Image: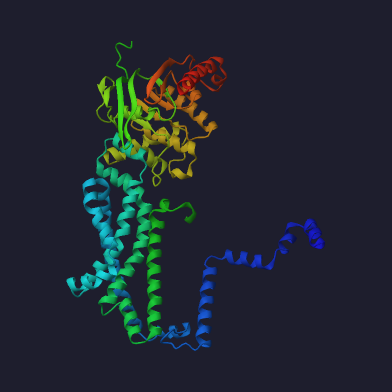
Length: 282
Length: 259
C-alpha cells in the first residue's frame, strides 16, 4: 500500500495511467468502439445457446442450435426468400403509407374541431382497444383473398400512435407563435402548414418509428391468419412441419427487415429534419 | 399638440373578466390611459396583475369585456398591421435560419417573401448587431441574440407601435441591461410608440418616458408618472440620484400595494 501511495504521488500522469486496474482499461477500450459491445453480447448469447443445445442434446425440432439455424437459410432458395420478404414488405408498407395518409389529416381535424374530436375520439379509442389479432380472422372473411385484408389489419395496428402523437405535437406549439399568426391575420391553413405541422415533426417521427415496427407486426399477424406467401406465413408453415431451423431463419430475416425499416425512418428524419432531433443524437 | 395628433393608444374604462373553471376571474378593471405617438411607456407591475392581458387587448388578440381600446382613434376589433409584438421568450422557429425567422411575418401573412423583404431583414439584423448570423439556426445563438432576432422579426413590417411583453426577463442581468440600451438606440434612430411591459423597476425607469404602475387583482393603474430623466440615457444614467429617487418612489407604490 505504502509503495503504491509513494509511486502514485511521485509519478507523472502517464505512469499513473499505467497503474489503472486492467478491468477498467478493458472496459474503456470496449466503450470506445461503437457497436462493439452489443455485438459481443450477441456472440456470447449465441455461444451459450450453441453449447447448451450440444451439452443437453436438445432436438432441433424443439430448439435448434444457431449453427443449425444457419443451414435453415439454405433450405429455401434466395429467390423464394425474396418472394416472402416482398410479400410481407408490400403489405407492411402499403398499410403504413395509408396510416400516414389517414392519420395526419385526422389529427389536424381532431385538434381543430371540437365537434370532430367529440365525435371521433371515443371511436378511435375503441378501435385501438380492440385486439387486432382477434378481429383479423373476421376481417379476412369480410374482405376475402388478396392483399386488401392484410393491408387493413396492418393499418389498424399502425395508425393509432400516429394520430395521437401528431395531435399532441400540433397542440404543443408555443402559444406566442399562434398569437403571432393571429396578429398577422394569416389564414388558418397557413398557421397549420407553417407553424403547427413543423412543430409537430418531432412527435410525428417518434410515432413514425413506432408505427413502422407495428406495421410489420400487422403484416405478420395477417399472414398467420391467411396467406400463402410472406415471412409470417413461412414461419407458421415451417413450424407446423417441425422445420424449426427454417422458422428461426425466417424470424431472423423478419427482425432484420424490421430493424432496417426503423433505421430508414430515422435516416429520413436525420436527413430532412435534423433540427427535430434531440441534441444528443445529432 | 396632443389635441391635433391622435393618441397612439387609448384605453377608456377597460375591464376584462375571464371565465375560468373556478369561476370568473377579473383581470382588469377600469383601466384608463393614453399613450402619445412615439412615446415610450413602461407598464410596471407584479406578476399576475394583467399586464400581458393589456398588451393582448391592444394587439387585438382578445376583446375587452367592457370599455374601449383605440389605436390612432380607431377602436380595436381585430389585429392591425401596424403593430409589432415582441414576446417574453423569443419563440423563434427552430427549423428556420435567423433570416427566415425575421422574414417569417411576410411569408406567413402573404405566403411569399420578396427580395425587398429579405433585404430589409438583413438591414434590420445589421442594426440589431446580428450581421453575419443570417444563416445560423436559432439554437446556435445565445439567449440575448435570440431575443434580438425576436425584435428584428417584430420590426420587419415597420410597425408604428411596438408591444413588448417582458422581452428581456429571461436574460441574465448583464445582457438585460445591454439589450435595454440597444433598444433605446433603435428607438431613438427610428421612433416608434413603445409599450414595454416589465416587472423590473430599474428597467422601466431607465427606458421609459412614462411609467404606468399596475396593481393586481383586479389589475388597475395605480400610478402614472413621467420619468424625470433626460435623454439620451446610458450607463451613467444608472448612477443618477434622480433615477434612484424615482425608482424608490415606484418601489414604495408597489410594496404598499402588495402589503
